[in-house]
Length: 138
Image 1 (cartoon, rainbow, N blue to C red):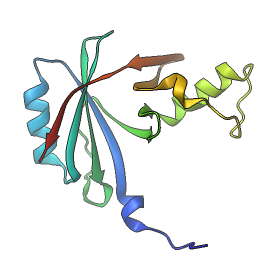
Image 2: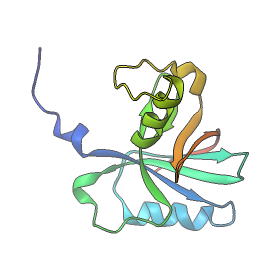
Image 3: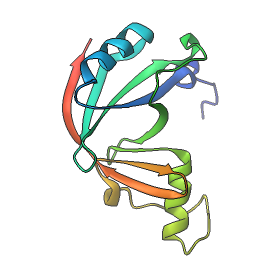
Image 4: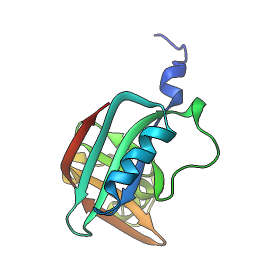
């Protein structure tokens, strides 16, 4: 088994910037100008329930300054189901599915959360269904 650290993976962070349709063009320009985008792609998702747009992109965290764009959070991604989530949201989901008990070994059925973003806002757990609006190749 190979136990070496892959520093490229450690440096790779998935950012998510929320915006409105009106502000989408300027946010995309800000993202391109501010960050070194890994894999040369920005995925723009639409959240129909809130009419928000979400720009997701991988950045090299070694080149990030302390200030990130407003409305930006760090996410994780489950590739098999295309689920985006925060750690707090994952913990809240597990607790809600497991009788209020947080158990890091609990197996989430990711197919139930296909093409969505899992978030917490305050004490509230949110599941936001998403649709691909645009994929931008840089």
